[in-house]
Image 1 (cartoon, one colour):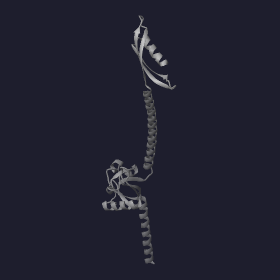
Image 2 (tube, one colour; image 1 turned 135 degrees about the vertical axis):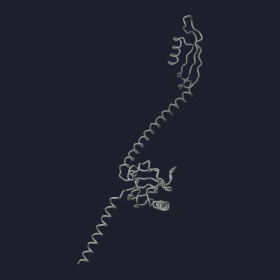
Image 3 (cartoon, rainbow, N blue to C red; image 1 turned 30 degrees about the vertical axis):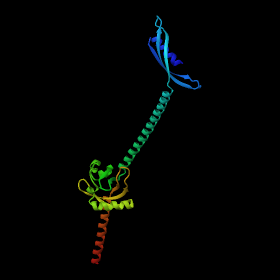
Length: 235
């Protein structure tokens, strides 16, 4: 075989004491198999040319098969890693898009533990609306920013959410400066899943302008009624 001849010739030319070669041979069955020959130069002439060599040949078909299977597994693993990396990158890009949408939608979004009311996540708008940073907001509970959400009221709301799935209501949120901001809340209940506890997701809208307009409308109505009474009394 060419591999055997090349290894033997290299040993002769270099003066090395031996050689090693792996090559394929045709078996008695007609199939091709793998063998390995370890050879030693046992006699050289006066010019250093090899005259006799002793070789030991072993069947390495099982080892070659194992190496081929290992290479196949390695290629398969690399393919899986590549596919998984692409999937993770796609998921990461989707998450970035979602975060961008959540922060740019103009609505406060806040997650809290149903049992404790501890705030566990919030978008930038929810924090900025109250004058907090997102990191500061995560150190608070819902009761710290909602004067109506004491322990008893919080428990009642969560019980309703478990039954209905969602609620819509108006409340007030206390900003970092202490000012009370009227908000409209849409609450959704998320059951415990895997290692995550029961959660409440709240969508918050600042309704200060709407409340101011309603107050102005009431004041105008009262002023008109007072004017009518005054006119009637004059007549």
